[in-house]
Image (cartoon, rainbow, N blue to C red; front, side, top):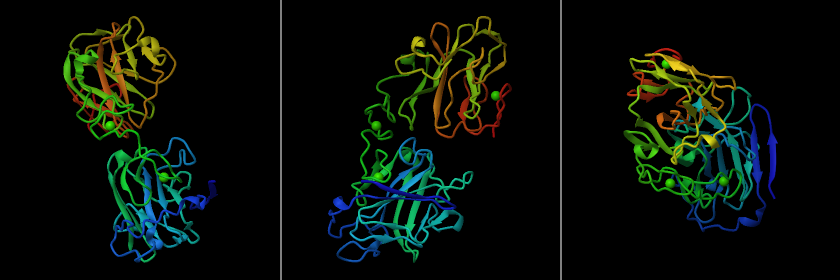
Length: 376
Ligand SMILES: [Ca+2]
Ligand SMILES: [Ca+2]
Ligand SMILES: [Ca+2]
Protein backbone atom coordinates (compact mmCIF):
# COMPACT_ATOMS: atom_id res chain seq x y z
CA UNK A 1 0.00 0.00 0.00
CA UNK A 2 2.66 2.48 0.98
CA UNK A 3 5.61 2.71 -1.28
CA UNK A 4 8.59 4.57 0.03
CA UNK A 5 11.60 5.56 -2.01
CA UNK A 6 14.53 7.12 -0.22
CA UNK A 7 17.56 8.63 -1.84
CA UNK A 8 20.42 9.85 0.27
CA UNK A 9 23.03 12.44 -0.50
CA UNK A 10 23.42 16.17 -0.13
CA UNK A 11 19.70 16.27 -0.54
CA UNK A 12 17.38 13.63 0.75
CA UNK A 13 13.91 13.26 -0.59
CA UNK A 14 11.40 10.94 0.92
CA UNK A 15 8.50 10.28 -1.36
CA UNK A 16 5.41 8.43 -0.38
CA UNK A 17 2.83 7.43 -2.90
CA UNK A 18 -0.48 6.06 -1.82
CA UNK A 19 -2.58 3.70 -3.81
CA UNK A 20 -4.86 5.70 -6.02
CA UNK A 21 -8.08 4.29 -4.70
CA UNK A 22 -8.85 7.26 -2.46
CA UNK A 23 -8.40 10.25 -4.72
CA UNK A 24 -11.84 10.63 -6.20
CA UNK A 25 -12.89 13.33 -3.80
CA UNK A 26 -12.46 16.38 -5.99
CA UNK A 27 -14.45 19.14 -4.35
CA UNK A 28 -15.22 20.81 -7.64
CA UNK A 29 -12.83 23.72 -7.55
CA UNK A 30 -13.49 25.15 -4.11
CA UNK A 31 -9.90 24.41 -3.19
CA UNK A 32 -8.49 26.93 -0.73
CA UNK A 33 -6.30 29.34 -2.58
CA UNK A 34 -3.71 31.04 -0.41
CA UNK A 35 -2.26 33.34 -3.03
CA UNK A 36 -5.24 34.33 -5.07
CA UNK A 37 -5.43 33.52 -8.75
CA UNK A 38 -2.95 30.69 -8.80
CA UNK A 39 -5.36 27.94 -9.64
CA UNK A 40 -7.13 27.52 -12.90
CA UNK A 41 -10.91 27.41 -12.99
CA UNK A 42 -12.72 24.12 -13.04
CA UNK A 43 -10.63 21.13 -12.05
CA UNK A 44 -7.62 21.26 -9.81
CA UNK A 45 -4.49 22.60 -11.38
CA UNK A 46 -0.92 21.68 -10.59
CA UNK A 47 -0.92 24.26 -7.83
CA UNK A 48 -3.54 22.25 -5.96
CA UNK A 49 -0.52 20.95 -4.04
CA UNK A 50 -0.81 22.12 -0.47
CA UNK A 51 1.19 22.33 2.72
CA UNK A 52 -0.62 19.66 4.71
CA UNK A 53 1.16 18.87 7.99
CA UNK A 54 4.06 20.21 10.09
CA UNK A 55 6.04 19.03 13.09
CA UNK A 56 8.24 21.41 15.11
CA UNK A 57 9.98 18.58 16.94
CA UNK A 58 11.69 15.58 15.45
CA UNK A 59 9.22 12.67 15.30
CA UNK A 60 9.70 10.25 18.20
CA UNK A 61 8.68 7.20 16.18
CA UNK A 62 7.48 6.13 12.77
CA UNK A 63 9.36 6.31 9.45
CA UNK A 64 10.75 9.80 10.22
CA UNK A 65 11.88 9.12 13.81
CA UNK A 66 14.85 11.27 14.72
CA UNK A 67 15.01 12.91 11.28
CA UNK A 68 14.18 16.43 12.46
CA UNK A 69 11.28 18.80 11.89
CA UNK A 70 9.06 17.58 9.07
CA UNK A 71 6.73 19.11 6.50
CA UNK A 72 4.15 17.11 4.55
CA UNK A 73 2.72 18.13 1.18
CA UNK A 74 -0.31 16.60 -0.47
CA UNK A 75 -1.50 16.50 -4.05
CA UNK A 76 -5.30 16.23 -3.94
CA UNK A 77 -5.55 16.57 -7.71
CA UNK A 78 -5.92 13.89 -10.34
CA UNK A 79 -2.65 14.50 -12.15
CA UNK A 80 0.92 14.12 -10.95
CA UNK A 81 2.61 17.42 -10.07
CA UNK A 82 6.22 18.19 -10.96
CA UNK A 83 7.73 20.33 -8.17
CA UNK A 84 11.11 20.94 -9.84
CA UNK A 85 12.16 24.51 -9.12
CA UNK A 86 9.46 25.12 -6.51
CA UNK A 87 10.67 26.59 -3.24
CA UNK A 88 9.92 26.12 0.44
CA UNK A 89 11.01 28.71 3.00
CA UNK A 90 10.43 30.02 6.51
CA UNK A 91 11.25 33.46 5.13
CA UNK A 92 8.46 35.05 3.04
CA UNK A 93 11.27 36.95 1.25
CA UNK A 94 12.80 33.60 0.19
CA UNK A 95 16.32 34.40 1.45
CA UNK A 96 18.61 31.82 -0.16
CA UNK A 97 19.99 30.47 3.12
CA UNK A 98 16.46 29.92 4.45
CA UNK A 99 14.98 28.42 1.30
CA UNK A 100 14.83 24.90 -0.08
CA UNK A 101 14.52 24.45 -3.84
CA UNK A 102 12.88 21.23 -4.98
CA UNK A 103 15.32 19.42 -7.25
CA UNK A 104 14.48 18.11 -10.73
CA UNK A 105 12.57 14.86 -10.61
CA UNK A 106 10.50 15.77 -7.55
CA UNK A 107 6.92 14.79 -8.23
CA UNK A 108 3.85 14.02 -6.19
CA UNK A 109 1.46 11.45 -7.60
CA UNK A 110 -2.30 12.12 -7.65
CA UNK A 111 -3.55 11.60 -4.09
CA UNK A 112 0.04 11.27 -2.93
CA UNK A 113 2.11 12.81 -0.19
CA UNK A 114 5.64 14.16 -0.02
CA UNK A 115 7.45 14.53 3.32
CA UNK A 116 10.59 16.65 3.69
CA UNK A 117 12.70 16.95 6.84
CA UNK A 118 15.05 19.65 8.14
CA UNK A 119 18.63 19.53 6.86
CA UNK A 120 21.01 18.34 9.55
CA UNK A 121 24.43 19.93 9.13
CA UNK A 122 26.09 17.36 11.40
CA UNK A 123 25.07 14.40 9.28
CA UNK A 124 24.60 16.35 6.02
CA UNK A 125 21.24 14.67 5.52
CA UNK A 126 17.75 16.04 5.15
CA UNK A 127 16.15 18.71 3.06
CA UNK A 128 15.06 22.22 4.02
CA UNK A 129 17.69 24.57 5.56
CA UNK A 130 15.64 25.88 8.47
CA UNK A 131 14.07 24.61 11.66
CA UNK A 132 10.49 25.09 12.77
CA UNK A 133 10.53 26.71 16.22
CA UNK A 134 8.76 24.58 18.83
CA UNK A 135 8.18 27.63 21.02
CA UNK A 136 7.75 30.59 18.67
CA UNK A 137 5.80 31.29 15.53
CA UNK A 138 6.87 30.64 11.95
CA UNK A 139 5.51 31.44 8.53
CA UNK A 140 6.14 28.66 6.04
CA UNK A 141 5.73 29.50 2.36
CA UNK A 142 5.50 27.27 -0.70
CA UNK A 143 6.05 28.92 -4.09
CA UNK A 144 6.10 27.48 -7.58
CA UNK A 145 8.91 27.66 -10.12
CA UNK A 146 7.86 31.21 -11.04
CA UNK A 147 7.98 32.21 -7.35
CA UNK A 148 4.19 32.57 -7.25
CA UNK A 149 2.81 31.77 -3.80
CA UNK A 150 1.04 28.42 -3.78
CA UNK A 151 0.38 28.00 -0.07
CA UNK A 152 1.43 29.59 3.18
CA UNK A 153 0.83 28.84 6.85
CA UNK A 154 1.61 30.87 9.97
CA UNK A 155 2.11 28.29 12.68
CA UNK A 156 2.49 28.54 16.46
CA UNK A 157 5.34 26.07 16.92
CA UNK A 158 4.04 25.01 20.34
CA UNK A 159 0.98 23.56 18.63
CA UNK A 160 3.15 21.71 16.10
CA UNK A 161 5.29 19.80 18.57
CA UNK A 162 3.44 16.62 17.70
CA UNK A 163 1.60 17.68 14.55
CA UNK A 164 -0.20 20.70 13.14
CA UNK A 165 -2.26 19.79 10.10
CA UNK A 166 -5.25 20.36 7.85
CA UNK A 167 -8.31 18.17 8.35
CA UNK A 168 -9.48 17.10 5.89
CA UNK A 169 -6.29 16.91 3.83
CA UNK A 170 -5.41 19.86 1.57
CA UNK A 171 -8.48 21.98 2.21
CA UNK A 172 -9.41 21.81 5.90
CA UNK A 173 -8.66 24.19 8.73
CA UNK A 174 -5.28 23.84 10.45
CA UNK A 175 -5.29 22.44 13.99
CA UNK A 176 -3.62 20.03 16.40
CA UNK A 177 -3.36 16.57 14.93
CA UNK A 178 -2.05 13.09 15.44
CA UNK A 179 1.23 12.64 13.60
CA UNK A 180 0.48 11.10 10.19
CA UNK A 181 3.47 11.98 8.02
CA UNK A 182 2.91 10.50 4.57
CA UNK A 183 -0.70 9.58 5.28
CA UNK A 184 -4.20 11.03 5.70
CA UNK A 185 -4.46 13.65 8.44
CA UNK A 186 -6.29 12.95 11.71
CA UNK A 187 -7.44 15.43 14.38
CA UNK A 188 -5.78 15.05 17.80
CA UNK A 189 -8.07 13.70 20.53
CA UNK A 190 -6.92 16.47 22.87
CA UNK A 191 -5.31 19.86 22.39
CA UNK A 192 -2.97 21.33 24.97
CA UNK A 193 -3.59 25.06 24.86
CA UNK A 194 -7.30 25.19 24.08
CA UNK A 195 -8.19 26.01 27.70
CA UNK A 196 -10.15 22.78 28.24
CA UNK A 197 -8.86 19.83 30.25
CA UNK A 198 -9.07 16.71 28.06
CA UNK A 199 -7.72 13.16 27.93
CA UNK A 200 -4.25 13.01 29.53
CA UNK A 201 -4.18 16.68 30.55
CA UNK A 202 -4.21 17.69 34.22
CA UNK A 203 -4.71 21.37 33.43
CA UNK A 204 -5.01 23.60 30.40
CA UNK A 205 -4.38 27.35 30.37
CA UNK A 206 -6.18 28.99 33.27
CA UNK A 207 -8.11 25.81 34.09
CA UNK A 208 -6.14 24.15 36.88
CA UNK A 209 -8.85 21.63 37.67
CA UNK A 210 -9.69 23.61 40.81
CA UNK A 211 -6.26 23.03 42.33
CA UNK A 212 -3.99 25.48 44.14
CA UNK A 213 -0.48 25.23 45.59
CA UNK A 214 -1.89 24.09 48.95
CA UNK A 215 -3.39 21.01 47.28
CA UNK A 216 0.15 19.92 46.40
CA UNK A 217 1.44 20.44 49.93
CA UNK A 218 2.91 23.92 49.54
CA UNK A 219 2.06 26.74 51.94
CA UNK A 220 1.21 29.33 49.29
CA UNK A 221 2.19 30.89 46.02
CA UNK A 222 0.72 30.70 42.53
CA UNK A 223 0.02 27.45 40.72
CA UNK A 224 0.21 27.45 36.92
CA UNK A 225 -0.16 25.08 33.97
CA UNK A 226 2.64 24.19 31.58
CA UNK A 227 1.57 25.46 28.14
CA UNK A 228 3.39 22.62 26.40
CA UNK A 229 2.64 19.59 28.58
CA UNK A 230 -0.67 20.64 30.19
CA UNK A 231 0.66 19.41 33.51
CA UNK A 232 0.64 21.47 36.71
CA UNK A 233 3.57 23.85 37.12
CA UNK A 234 4.32 24.53 40.80
CA UNK A 235 7.44 26.61 40.12
CA UNK A 236 5.89 29.66 41.82
CA UNK A 237 4.45 27.73 44.74
CA UNK A 238 6.09 28.46 48.10
CA UNK A 239 7.15 26.30 51.05
CA UNK A 240 8.32 29.05 53.39
CA UNK A 241 11.75 27.37 53.57
CA UNK A 242 15.05 29.00 52.60
CA UNK A 243 16.28 25.97 50.63
CA UNK A 244 15.42 25.83 46.93
CA UNK A 245 16.32 24.29 43.62
CA UNK A 246 18.39 27.10 42.13
CA UNK A 247 19.75 26.11 38.72
CA UNK A 248 19.59 23.18 36.29
CA UNK A 249 20.61 22.19 32.78
CA UNK A 250 19.54 19.39 30.46
CA UNK A 251 22.83 18.50 28.76
CA UNK A 252 24.77 16.97 31.68
CA UNK A 253 21.60 17.00 33.80
CA UNK A 254 23.10 18.95 36.71
CA UNK A 255 20.84 20.37 39.43
CA UNK A 256 21.96 23.01 41.91
CA UNK A 257 20.31 23.30 45.33
CA UNK A 258 20.88 26.48 47.32
CA UNK A 259 20.42 27.39 50.97
CA UNK A 260 19.61 31.08 51.05
CA UNK A 261 19.16 31.06 54.81
CA UNK A 262 21.50 32.07 57.61
CA UNK A 263 21.68 28.59 59.14
CA UNK A 264 22.85 25.24 57.85
CA UNK A 265 20.06 22.83 56.82
CA UNK A 266 20.11 19.08 57.34
CA UNK A 267 19.04 17.38 54.10
CA UNK A 268 19.08 13.84 55.54
CA UNK A 269 16.33 11.81 53.89
CA UNK A 270 15.24 14.63 51.58
CA UNK A 271 14.36 13.51 48.06
CA UNK A 272 15.08 14.95 44.62
CA UNK A 273 12.65 13.59 42.01
CA UNK A 274 11.18 14.15 38.56
CA UNK A 275 7.97 12.27 39.47
CA UNK A 276 6.10 14.72 41.64
CA UNK A 277 2.51 14.88 40.46
CA UNK A 278 -0.87 16.38 41.12
CA UNK A 279 -1.67 13.52 43.50
CA UNK A 280 1.36 14.35 45.61
CA UNK A 281 4.44 12.19 45.77
CA UNK A 282 4.69 8.44 46.28
CA UNK A 283 8.35 7.48 46.83
CA UNK A 284 7.48 3.77 46.70
CA UNK A 285 6.55 4.04 43.02
CA UNK A 286 9.63 6.10 42.13
CA UNK A 287 12.71 3.98 41.50
CA UNK A 288 14.56 6.94 39.97
CA UNK A 289 14.98 9.31 42.89
CA UNK A 290 17.84 10.63 44.94
CA UNK A 291 17.44 10.23 48.69
CA UNK A 292 20.04 12.39 50.39
CA UNK A 293 22.19 10.33 52.76
CA UNK A 294 22.02 10.78 56.49
CA UNK A 295 24.32 13.59 57.53
CA UNK A 296 24.01 15.56 54.27
CA UNK A 297 24.14 19.19 55.29
CA UNK A 298 23.87 22.35 53.22
CA UNK A 299 25.71 25.26 54.79
CA UNK A 300 24.20 28.70 55.18
CA UNK A 301 24.47 30.40 51.80
CA UNK A 302 25.80 27.16 50.33
CA UNK A 303 25.33 25.55 46.90
CA UNK A 304 25.06 21.80 46.34
CA UNK A 305 25.49 20.53 42.79
CA UNK A 306 23.85 17.16 42.10
CA UNK A 307 25.03 15.38 38.97
CA UNK A 308 23.33 12.55 37.11
CA UNK A 309 24.53 9.03 37.84
CA UNK A 310 24.17 5.99 40.05
CA UNK A 311 26.77 6.95 42.65
CA UNK A 312 25.93 8.18 46.14
CA UNK A 313 24.76 11.78 46.03
CA UNK A 314 23.82 11.62 42.34
CA UNK A 315 20.34 11.58 40.83
CA UNK A 316 19.47 8.78 38.40
CA UNK A 317 16.79 10.54 36.33
CA UNK A 318 17.42 12.55 33.20
CA UNK A 319 16.40 16.12 32.48
CA UNK A 320 14.89 16.39 29.02
CA UNK A 321 15.77 19.37 26.87
CA UNK A 322 12.17 19.12 25.64
CA UNK A 323 10.86 20.27 29.02
CA UNK A 324 10.70 18.51 32.35
CA UNK A 325 10.14 19.09 36.06
CA UNK A 326 12.17 18.58 39.24
CA UNK A 327 10.93 18.61 42.81
CA UNK A 328 12.76 18.67 46.15
CA UNK A 329 10.81 16.97 48.94
CA UNK A 330 11.51 16.74 52.67
CA UNK A 331 11.87 13.37 54.39
CA UNK A 332 8.24 13.62 55.55
CA UNK A 333 7.24 14.16 51.88
CA UNK A 334 6.36 17.83 52.35
CA UNK A 335 7.47 19.59 49.15
CA UNK A 336 10.29 22.13 49.45
CA UNK A 337 10.55 23.40 45.90
CA UNK A 338 9.44 22.53 42.37
CA UNK A 339 10.66 23.70 38.98
CA UNK A 340 8.99 23.10 35.63
CA UNK A 341 10.76 24.22 32.46
CA UNK A 342 9.64 24.28 28.85
CA UNK A 343 11.40 23.00 25.67
CA UNK A 344 14.85 24.50 25.06
CA UNK A 345 14.85 26.56 28.28
CA UNK A 346 17.42 24.37 30.03
CA UNK A 347 19.83 23.73 27.19
CA UNK A 348 22.45 26.08 28.69
CA UNK A 349 21.27 26.96 32.19
CA UNK A 350 17.82 27.54 33.64
CA UNK A 351 18.33 29.57 36.80
CA UNK A 352 16.64 31.59 39.51
CA UNK A 353 17.54 35.28 39.63
CA UNK A 354 18.30 36.32 42.24
CA UNK A 355 19.33 33.10 43.97
CA UNK A 356 16.95 31.33 46.26
CA UNK A 357 13.23 30.77 46.79
CA UNK A 358 12.19 34.29 45.76
CA UNK A 359 14.04 34.31 42.44
CA UNK A 360 12.45 34.41 39.02
CA UNK A 361 13.38 31.58 36.67
CA UNK A 362 14.83 32.35 33.28
CA UNK A 363 16.49 30.50 30.41
CA UNK A 364 20.00 30.85 29.00
CA UNK A 365 21.70 31.97 32.22
CA UNK A 366 25.48 31.87 32.37
CA UNK A 367 26.15 28.42 33.92
CA UNK A 368 27.32 28.86 37.54
CA UNK A 369 26.94 25.44 39.12
CA UNK A 370 28.20 25.70 42.69
CA UNK A 371 28.14 29.49 42.76
CA UNK A 372 25.75 32.44 42.70
CA UNK A 373 23.59 32.62 39.58
CA UNK A 374 24.37 35.03 36.77
CA UNK A 375 22.22 36.54 34.03
CA UNK A 376 23.19 35.77 30.42
CA1 LIG B 1 -0.46 13.60 7.21
CA1 LIG C 1 -6.96 20.72 26.17
CA1 LIG D 1 24.36 28.69 40.25
